[in-house]
Image (cartoon, rainbow, N blue to C red; front, side):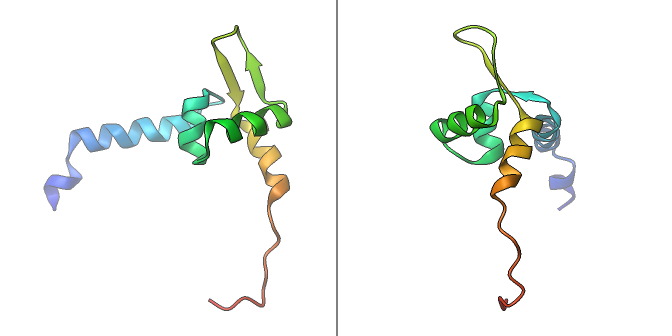
Length: 84
């Protein structure tokens, strides 16, 4: 068990994943991983939110904060009568 805790490769991978969540601007590929949605759906949502920054025809960045605020509009209220 101690070997898993000190696995340097795994710890490095976890640090990289955490850095990804703290970024202000992300690429489509990173967004697909963070939000677990397809490229097409991410592109549509980011454009609807106004979070797309086109640097040129190839490089496109998404402002993660704007997209997160836009996605909060789709949150459903809690249902207190649901039994778990």
